[in-house]
Figure 1 (spheres, rainbow, N blue to C red):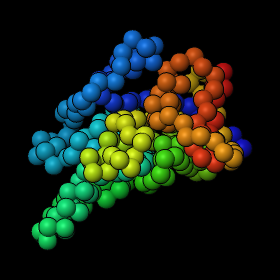
Figure 2 (figure 1 turned 135 degrees about the vertical axis):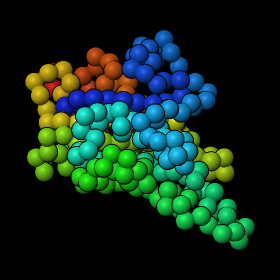
Figure 3 (figure 1 turned 90 degrees about the horizontal axis):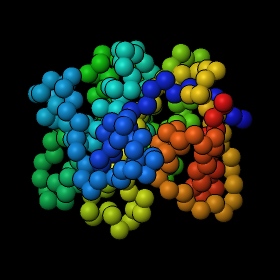
Figure 4 (figure 1 turned 90 degrees about the vertical axis):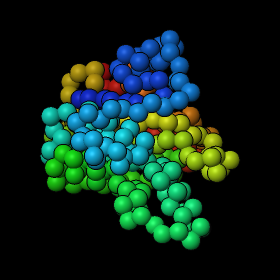
Length: 243
């Protein structure tokens, strides 16, 4: 069964790609990903709180705050990440290995739903929030969860945020698809315009691993293509334009 939806707002952040114009130039082949990731300013968050945020949290919160716009205080949120804030978690693991005391604050900010919780705190949002991790399919799993929740609960809108940064050096031999990218999507029920899409999931056999799903999705929505397909092992995802 296909689920339809509309994208009311899309905000993305990657190395060298920080504005809508940057992303349009990237999609047309006129700009490439940079070597280093710069961080958003997050001017709306008080400096005392901003200093405690990791690069992962800063990028995720930027996309969440910018994409949600005027709906920050009451919008349901689905947050997805394959690895979460792995740099912070790795630091805690190293502390344990060295028999050092753990910081309760660092531990609290390392859990998988920490970025979603911070969004709730900063905006006063008490709407339902969930955090998803689905391995190599984390982007599409979170996307499906968002659209399905919107349909099942007849929501006027839902916020979907995906974020993953390159894993620490010690994990890189084990991770092949490792990109710095965060995306915030303000999703609404499908409308009769060019911003409406269908999402469909199918099981398949023997499918090869596709490129970074989040980058492939950005390439698709910025283009005039009518279909996007993402294959991961036995999972086959289709996104298509309604018009």
